[in-house]
Image (cartoon, rainbow, N blue to C red; front, side, top):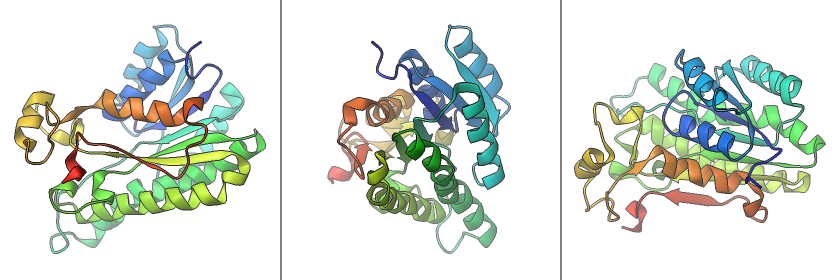
Length: 254
């Protein structure tokens, strides 16, 4: 039996990187997946998953819009009957410190990274509660825990990920009565589209260095985070809520 047999999962930011890795992994583990993104690349990636024999739906989705969330949740229920899992993976990073960050940048990053998580939880919790429970996995970052290079010089990014960390604990406390588990994942240096022109995890690891991430190859891959999402989404973590799963190769051990 696969780890997510019979489960219905919404995964945001699924056109690439950690979200795409999670969509592929969850589908292989038996979930019916609703993959969402603003990128036109989503449809092609979802089609490749579908042709492998998995049930998956692609939807254009602005996570900062309550109306867009209503459309996604409504379509999920219409297609698959319920929502068991939400992975709030979508996010953006802008490498600007406090003095360089303008209000437009601040608002955009907070809207996507923090407001998007709030709206997502607000949209799915009633359905999960009515169905007897569920699992929400929110992608934060080591930037929500430590400063310095851990936030990539992103003031708005750091603030948004700290907000995700905190609202995860709020939701875990207040919705445990509904048998809804809410946890956060905190990646360190991971090779994704946010890594710029770097072509390999080894190249990123060399740039990050052993002084930051002691565990070779000193940077992670998208699938490393997807496996963390999977653990928190499946019933193996049935007694885990409000926790922070750090996947960073040892970065914050410093």
